[in-house]
Image (cartoon, rainbow over all chains, first blue to last red; front, top):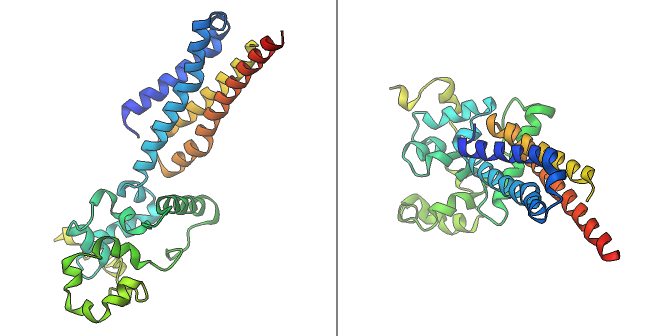
Length: 201
Length: 64
């Protein structure tokens, strides 16, 4: 459920529409009444819709939103596996990224329209859930872009000074070599199955 | 402005807001899409219907 103030505001908007339906003929006779109708049927509903959708778009970037679909439950559990080499787990457990937006932080492009593309992919998820069916094995729509990693790590001292990165630094920063060519485990699903979870200890 | 015109506008606007209200109470990915794809366009449509009706009245007055 969205916050109560949003629900109350929308309920007030609906009530105003009902009042405009029944009280409209009387209101329309006076100039002030016509102005009230303009506010009640145009300005207020538009403002409410913009506010509601803005909040909704913000909420749709939250980890809880992504994991609210049961198909993502195991990926959510992979954040807790006891494996320091699993990218999702180590980023989550060490708070390398904000936990509230952990899925979105790694799975959206930071290029122009990255947010829009992420939301459109979310639409495809819902379409798959209700219409075409969810594939047995979940996979990305496209190979994971190292640009997403470099968005945070690019100028990080730990990344730059890591001896293993030195010989391939140019390739990594130019995008000709994927970070995943070495960091191969993103979500350690084997340990999810084995229930080797960090917080279970 | 005819009574029917703004009554239609208020029905469409109210319907759009009702869809958004239901989606806000039962907040899931699917209902969010419903609010964005159905609720918000209905609100815009209702507002446009009201403004069109007002514009027609103003146009008729101008002609008179």
